[in-house]
Length: 276
Image 1 (cartoon, rainbow, N blue to C red):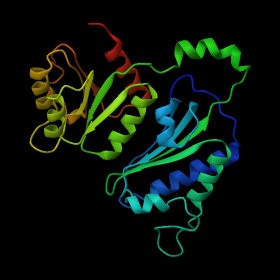
Image 2: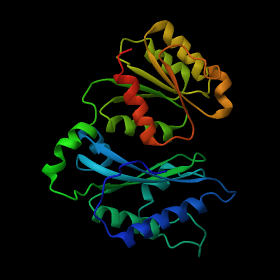
Image 3: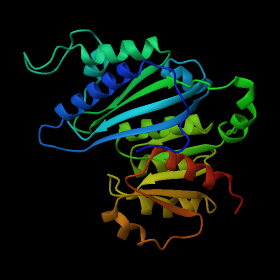
Image 4: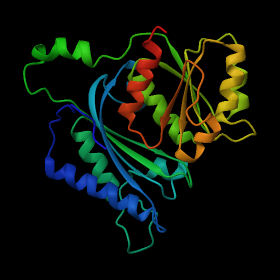
């Protein structure tokens, strides 16, 4: 999935091709029973807060992410994934050099690699590569300010999803846009925060939640406490009946899976900034 108007980045093309191939091979090997590999590119404006979590200099980056629906990684494996010669594959089936070479290439290019994964929940590997200006930076400064700069607000978005990897990815997109993310893994804990006096401008919730309260029920309960709260449902086709097959109250919207992170960011901006 490719975003429109991608920025340029100055890197060694054969090394990028090799890095992408390595990530796809790892994704394939993580799905012995089959699955889906998704490759997504997007522009990312990383501010001071987001740069600290990614170990990057604040600025503009091109992200390239490879996701799979495979076995996932434990925190211990994630911590060692970039170590030379470390591999979880059987003897003779892997050198343990693939990810370390990817990491080395990206760091030498001024970027960073991030892993988002949970056991049995799949993995997303994201390369962040610095933007390269084709002209003089001052020539595009005005355009960047108008089109690319994240919102400079203290607006807060609550993310409710039982998959930590999805919450992390969504939180990073929100931080890139200048919003403050807060997270909950199920309806009860989300409702407790909604009952507090903390600022929450938008509720983003998966429809299928554990714990006996689905996303629509959470939204309805939240509207009793905060009648003007805007709500974005993230749903698959099979879950549409839960949210009323598109029959929603004013201030509620639906984003259907699968979707790109750019589409998500655009919808968030539209919902928060609109005045109705």
